Length: 355
DNA sequence: CAGCAGGGGGCGC
DNA sequence: CGCCCCCTGCTGA
Ligand SMILES: [Zn+2]
Ligand SMILES: [Zn+2]
Ligand SMILES: [Zn+2]
Image (tube, rainbow, N blue to C red; front, side, top):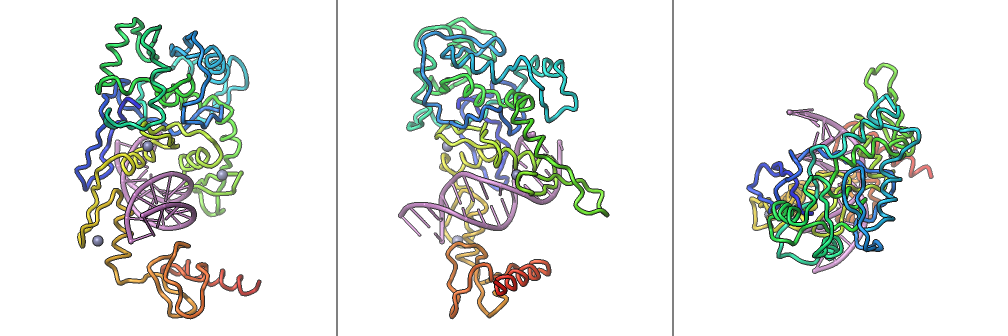
């Protein structure tokens, strides 16, 4: 929560300036694959972990856990000493490869919590600060060799330039890793049973015999993806509980950095960079502006019923203008008049009629 | 009607 | 892989 996510300009048409206050101390604001470990710990609230007084550092990455159980759990889950070493990214699944991965601990990476002003309050995460960073006790920063109290304090002050509000709110090691070391998370993912499962349910296929284009099919839901990356994203969002990208201002977590960014911009930023050219309306997303334009300033009704003259601005199950005479289920409202969708709609209608 | 989260396509690096 | 785009669905005013 404390460090900034590197902000690419998601809104090139605006001067949107997200108040990310903390320098990216961990490196280049690195790529953070949307992936996680296998523990399935989806509780991003971070507010529930039994606290013990003994702090034990994880030998793998130096983070000082709040409790021995946390540490143990971490070691079991994050640094398996044995096992099949499934890896999605490497053809080699040998133990040495695993060791190599482990040795790559803490590459340059950026933590991925969006943080706003320190004067803000109300984040459930914030209340954990005292748990993690009491006034005394050893605090080894996982990314920093500085382990002395004063050194760390200085370190934290540097990291979290807005006084002391955002330090380490995470209450256990896993949460710490999730929030601080996404890159590392990615590696863990590659080692985890989660990744193994991901690999298991990925079926490469060629949709058409004529086509040489490889497609990626999820065997769990039979969805076909055009790229492996899209499949992986799908896996993470649908078949995994991991959401490594946590918002610092609320308890929401996301599977991708971009979604976190979107969330932060819409929920925690006061900026509304999208201004309607026809009225005073402003909003946070381009999509909303587009919808507004469609609803408010367009006389076009692109969605024409194939069965009658009814037309409207929507093609969804949202409340649309009810058809004049008969209530036509949304399924009967055909899409934009493209050949394929038209055929599709016709087929659907036919099948409904046949029922 | 607007805010916002979820999810997939696709492009550029 | 990160990012942007788009669409969809849910929700509440
Ligand atoms: Zn699936
Ligand atoms: Zn948030
Ligand atoms: Zn307008």
